[in-house]
Length: 386
Image (cartoon, rainbow, N blue to C red):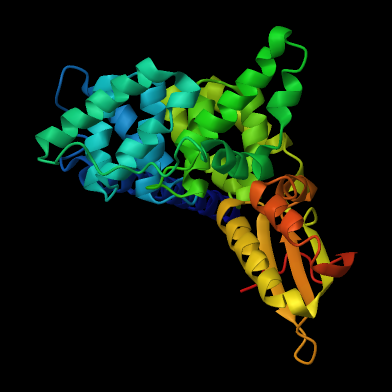
């Protein structure tokens, strides 16, 4: 009798456990379906999972996976996800899908200028013909939606400053690694290619407004994932981390690309993220210095004018200059102390070669009577100045 009761209890427990597992599975499946439907409607304005069309089974698999699972993986907002999708599709030249996603991007709040700028961003990595194909599709969508063309210009460089402004972005993030890598090519062609990278890629493209530098680097990471540019992915992993885009964010970008590019390219990119040195994520590389300067009192006003111009130019043009904060003693205004914080040694080395710094250095040479440079160690690592 006891054995029969025990067996009945076992049977009831097993059935209850199986029911609970099925309920959990169904809840997960329903969550995936509901998430898919909500995202699809927000993006395309229609209904997902209709079961219609010539291949309803593939559309069912695709929509549930992309909009029900991928779109909730990682900490990316829906606008960023659509921008990532658009650069991925431009890079792949899947133009019918690009048209649908340009519309979707606009539907969720990506501006026409941002759409145009993310396509411009592709040019250095996939070439002009493919970029022009992407622009043609975007402009087609803009016309259909009654958006006036051409869109407002976002270019900010002129011929005389494109090299300097490009270098101001390039050097703190990537240094001169391309120039070093191409040394030894005949007739100085390596130097020419390095110059193109600085002036065209960073000067003409990176400096454009409409997208933040952090967003541009995330989108470039998606482009590089799509075209399987492993060497560039390694350097752009470091560049992204320097800008504050951490490994989790980069992994989310790659996963957003995954349904469009497939597992092999995504796995390569994820492996590169996994192998990136953790020390890159810290602020340990910051160069922090105190400059103590004694100026000729009779030339103080002229010196301060030079200093103001140099600091303003450095803070505006150099990504690697984090802080330049100048103070003067109340009782001795010709005794000046400057707190200098650079992203790293490379950023500092670039800074002291800039035209605005050299102008300051040469212009104040006779004004400075004493100069003491003190390299320091922050007591609280990574502490930001508000």
